Image 1 (spheres, rainbow, N blue to C red):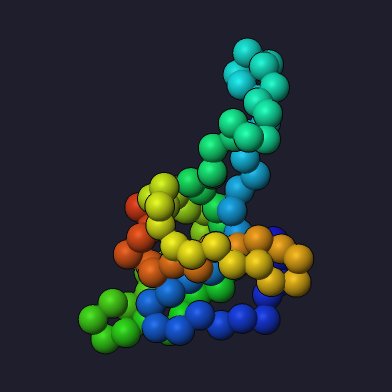
Image 2 (tube, rainbow, N blue to C red; image 1 turned 45 degrees about the vertical axis):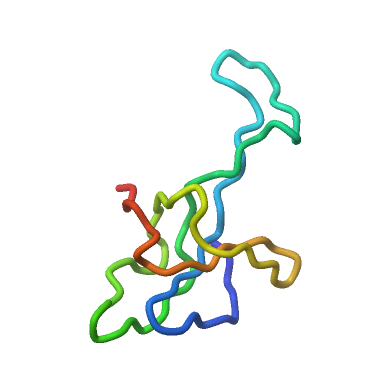
Length: 93
């Protein structure tokens, strides 16, 4: 898991996206231009939450989020997503 020196504010979390699928189940290679943006990732930093919205996810959780959720962020050559915790749809166990 990546280590990042950014602390999100309030009810925001930073996600490291999972790698995009490069082949189909039958072995067909998907070109870069046709790959879909992944909708799952790992939480690597969390804010402190607010009175109305306490944080329920923790660092290390694997999560699913909406297709258009969050904002892409590049830091130290790595790509991340920062989003409100309410944009997270589920925790993968």
